[in-house]
Amino acid sequence: MEFLWRVVTDALEALRAFGPAIRDVLGLTLEVSGIATVIGVVIGVPLGVALGAGRFRGRGALTVAVNTGMGMPPVLAGLVLLLFLWNEGPLGAWGLLFTPAAMIAAQALLAIPIAAGVTAGAVRGLAPDAVEQVRALGMGAFGRGVVLGREAWPGVVAAAAAAFGRVVSEVGAVLVVGGNIAGETRVLTTAIVQESRQANFGTALALGVILMVIAVVVNGVLTWLQFREAR
Amino acid sequence: MTAIDVRDLRHDGRGLRLEIGAFSVPEGGRVVLFGPNGAGKTTLLRLLAGTLGGGFAVPAAYLPQRPYLFRGRASRNLHLGLDPAGRLRADALAARLGVGGLGDRPARALSGGERQRIALARVLARPEDIVLLDEPLTALDAADRAVVGRVVAEALADRTAVIVTHDRDDAVMLADTMAVMVAGRIRQMGPVRDVLGLPVDDAVAAVLGVSNAHAGRTIGTDGALVEVDLGGATVWGVGDATGDAVALFGAETVTVYSGRQGTAGSARNRWVGTVGVVRELGRLVEIVVDAAFPVVVVLTPGSVDALGIHVGTVVTVAVKATAVRVVSR
Image 1 (cartoon, chains in turn blue, red):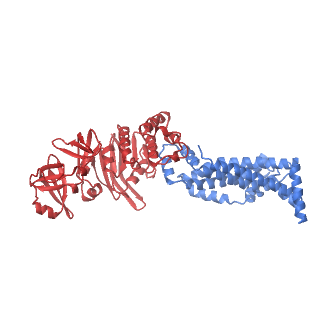
Image 2: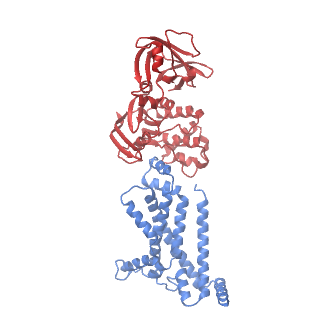
Image 3: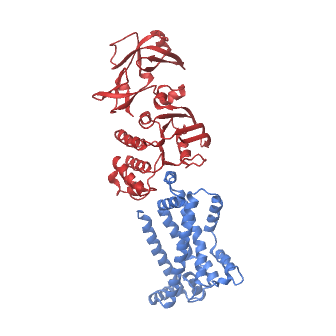
């Protein structure tokens, strides 16, 4: 009991001090996972609407790919990207390995299928009458997609929430392509791994609490958006 | 010019095989697809609208059977898919349909009839020359039907239209041509009055449920009743039509008396004529009496024998005014 109490007091002390190390880690986490989520939503939501309501060749294969991607282990996504970004890899010349850009790319790869899969499910769940009606409005494919995406608004918000939740909590991909370099590519999850390994349990717990606070705040905002009737 | 020309249409739907040898509508023609549930009317319309694939699509404004209003305000829905000129037309139509003041209301808060009228304004404001309407007046209550029907009929003037309905009054009000569909096929197609008055076979007659449809002009009213001049004879019926109108009554509602009976019974409509046609319709007998206009009557074989009816017999036919519906056209 005394051990746990000490860890908790250490964690509280770390949170109270909120030193530059923690601030850097928090800032980079929000930057990397935030941008990755935006990329995931920008690409994944339109893809999901197309998969949910479109009629085109390859829709089945693409749906399987997306559903598989939703369950892809982050560390595998990281490994694949690592191979591309490695010095001798096809994109090695870009020099992106062990930079935040590489971490954003890795997390975006994870976010896209989640955003697409959740959106596709929401669009498929719309009334068939809505899909019939949107085809009757004389709009192009883009316009139809906008109308249906907006109609499936709560599902689209859920897609964004799921994508952010997936990337902010994953450790494998950012560890492999980012390298967990202190002050450069260290984010909350990799920092927790690092501090735990060094038995700095108080700091690790403090970082964990920050991660949870981020999750609560972000999901709170998204839930508010979900309940709000789209105008 | 032919606006719609479909040939050799085959479509296998769930539980329905649609087979249309030829379906064509001239420019400016207004065709009503009439038939029982499951006859394939909506499927044919969706094939024409292109929402079902199949390669038979025509460029058309299309009102689905259950029009859908999307999230947001009624005005957003009213204007969806329209250019600025179309939006102005939609606003004007909405006002005439009695839903002009609902723009700021959330679409989801509207009643069924209000939604239907918003959807109608939206589709009638579209720029296409061909209009496809699936049961445009079904969601409306009786009081609104006549008003809305008139606005729709006006908006369809000079346009080509295909309209699905299972209501004879709507057919008369909105269309000039009627195509009766039974089990995935068009069994009869022709001018609305001809089809209503002379079904080609008993399947069509059963679908139509009416055999007498006569066009004329209203000349007077008496309480709830309207008198229609058919040219040489008049008929009293129920309805609020004025001007050009069609009187509709079923062959089974007509009573036949032998000889010239001026006063028997309470029926207000009474005409004398000679029997022109006698034909067996399954267990019943259909006769056509040539009065000032042809009156189709269905009788049992027993009645035919008792009255001594054969071609050339002089009879009096009578029908109660309450059995006659007068619909404006």
